Length: 104
Image (cartoon, rainbow, N blue to C red; front, side, top):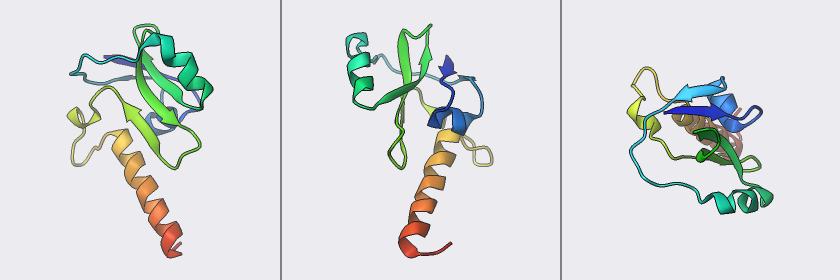
């Protein structure tokens, strides 16, 4: 499925582009009646499909690494070419470990 990514978000930083193609296998959707309410509390829907009818990526910009997808990035991930969300998660975890241990 084609996913449009919002500029200036974690998703955009991870993928480095405005459109990506990812695989789906679910029947879940965010209730559109709650999108504005959730965004007013700080959640950011940073990726969507079907002309903003389906939210695909959710993040909390003020959190160390709060990044969720409706699609399955593991389907396209390979040992020598990992999917961007996994690279971002591991990088964030390593940064946190360095902070906690005092290692630079």
